[in-house]
Image (cartoon, rainbow, N blue to C red; front, side, top):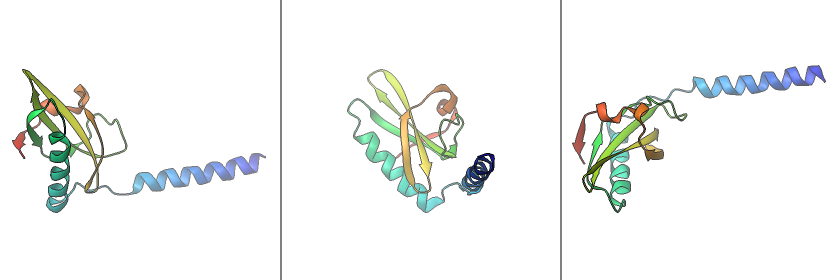
Length: 113
């Protein structure tokens, strides 16, 4: 039983290390164009958000997911400014949510789509 546990534990460790070693380079300009188009589609579908802007690609400051790179978007909702964080995997938006303080979206530079 001990031998089986050690062997299976070793396999699990091997796969965890392999996953963490996989490079996740910052998206290149072609990938960024695809990403920004997708983010624009998402923000346009939000009923209460107007005049959306997008940030450059930056690191996942909050470390709240496995993705290494994020893009922030902001838009006005009435008199309120709302921020959203988009998590990137390659040239896809893997996930998104309203931004939290640890995302540091407020510190990024924004430009119109």
